[in-house]
Each structure stands twice: as structure tokens, then as C-alpha cells.
Length: 382
Image 1 (cartoon, rainbow, N blue to C red):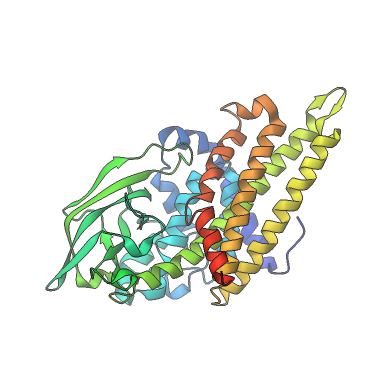
Image 2 (image 1 turned 120 degrees about the horizontal axis):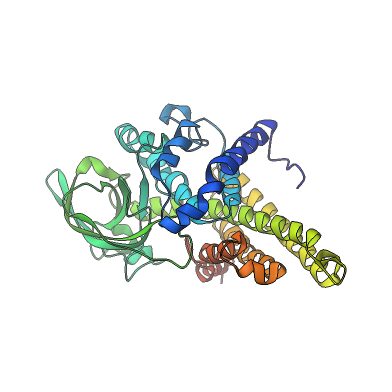
């Protein structure tokens, strides 16, 4: 991969540091984490100590003061661990649950929630999806009712990444019934508050090194100071968050696709059939050429989108295109990589089978393929 004009020498040094960290401290333990169904929390603190959880956050909130492409690099490099679960959990920590705290939070909220999250001392989760509502955020039913200087929250959330062990959750609630998207507000909810419970830990097909939960809130009371942003503006706040989430998801998908391609390419150069490496058979060689081309196209679209987003330009159509294409490419590439490996690719000890399973969720989480197409079509005036 040639050097990209968006990246400086500093970016490349950070990439080397992250890759070394992943190779030495993540990849060797992925099998164990997958078996356990969760990653150890000490690795989060380790990332905090290395400054990896605050690469793109300003120094005044405990970050490293880097630009947005630092987070893109982290998403790409974490995906090289050979699994999607742990990178997804980290993405929730730095690119989904905490950006709204930086963007809309008070100084007190940043000190209480954002700083410890950047240090890896607190695990964060994002609570949007409910049993009956996912992409239709404006219709969520979890309700927050004000009572003096407190709010009482009742409802349930599901498919919540980091949910079983999160220290706090950025919760999307309804504060005004009958107002649709204008009645949505965000709250920062500590999970040790009375009435907050994990009803069950969910068993997933893939992404197994990331734990996922169904949550119940029964008269959970939080102070008014835990309201994030403006009351009734939560829909706008979370829509902004989702755009950044989709850019990071695209970067992670490109990273996984690249890693799967590299593994398949190496295998095609070393595995021999009919007296020569399988990569020299035209059907395999052309497949690898197509894989490389599609990855590069998705990468360039993702980088260009990130460039605009970093400047504060929230281009919904382009972001949706990047998320749609990058995640579809990731699944297509991992599927073809498994095919190149043949029977060995379907064995549990081969990381390709895990990447194949994990990449499927990219096309669902953060907005399904279908939702991305709907956004693109609307932006086209259809």
C-alpha cells in the first residue's frame, strides 16, 4: 500500500506503534478472549496508558491532540488482530459512546465520564437499540420523566456492546411523548444505579471477544446534571454521533479486508497444487487482483469521507456510501479469502473463518445496508 497524501510522518509513526501493540499484546490472546466471550479490562487500561484511547481528543480533555485520521489509523490497525469483536468494543469506547460527551457535554460531565474513559478506567456503552426499535431512533420507547432535580428512567435496550460490564451508558430516551424526534434526549447513566440491570448476556454468531447485553431500566433515577446536551435535542445529537460511527466502521472494515487479503495472498504464494503455487492459477490470481482493487477503492472513498468529516462537513450521502461500500467489501473479501484457503479456511484454528463471521455484522451495526441505501436515495432527491 502506497503512502497516502492525507497521512504525515507522524501518522505513520503512530501506525507503527499501534501495529506493534496489536501484534504483541492483542493478537496472541484473541483466541482466549473469543473463548471467554469477552476481553480483559486491563487491556483497556493499557491502551489508556499508551494514549491510544484519546488519539483524536484535545489535550484539555485528556487526549493526545491528534487529528481525526489518528482514530482512522487505530480502527484499521486494531482490525489486524484477526477478530472484529475487540476492535468493535474499542470503537464504541472512543468513537461512539464518548464523542457526544466531548461535543455536547459540560466540563463536569467531561471530567466525570470522558476523562476516565480516555484513560481506560471506565468502560462506556451506547444505548440506542430496543427490542422493537433500532434504526428508527425517533420511535424509541425508553422513557425519562423529570421529578424535581432528578429524572426517572424506565425501559429496555438490546444488542448493547460493552453492556454486561459498562461503567456508564450514553442512553437515548424519550422525554416528551407525542413529539417524535423532537422528544428525544440523551442521558449519561451510571450502571451501578438502583434499578439498572443486565437481563442477559447475548450469545452471538461472531464478534465473540466483545460482550453484548440486553439491559433493563426500572425507575432508574439520575440527576438533571446527567442530561447530555439540550433536552429534546437528543435526536440531532445522536444523528451526529452516528455519522462519525459510520466513518470509523468503514475504516475498521477496510482494515479487516486488507488483513484478510494479505493472509490469502501469502497462502496463494505458498500453497501448491498441480506443481505450482495456487496464485499462479489464473482463477485465483485474478480473484486476488479484484480483491486488492475493491479494497483500494473502498479505502480511497473512506479516506476522502474522513477528510471532509474532520473539517466538520457532515456529508450524509458520502458517509453512507463509504459505510455501505467498505462493509460490503470487507464481507466479500473475507468470503473470497476463505475460499482461497479452501478446507483449511473453514477450520476453527484459522483466523479467516472468524473474520468471515465477524465481518457480517459490519453490514448491520451502525445502520444496515438498506438504511444506508435509503439515506443515499433521499440525498439524491428520490
